[in-house]
Image (cartoon, rainbow, N blue to C red; front, side):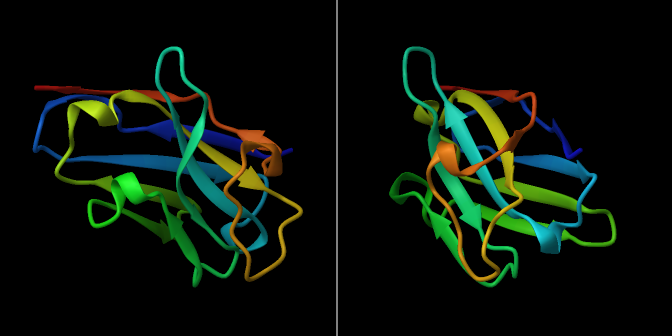
Length: 127
């Protein structure tokens, strides 16, 4: 059983920064492909950043390129999403997700590719 626990959400002003954490238990990070998704009210859940099991291949949505960075601490089995230069349109519930059937060098951008999800953390950016 894989469990994902997110933390780090909150409310900041536009231009500010937040770092989200996703603590993984039940599998090591090298055995799962990971993704960060977000969902605003009335909208679909969209990928923000996705990374392969290897950690060497990463996808960034166009809307966050140059502002959001994914990283990992293998010793803590934790994935991070550093979010800088935040904008009001970044406001959403953010979810981390794990794909336990992933090929080693591939990242995955569809929610349907992921079989475990965290509970979500609210990020609110004020203008």
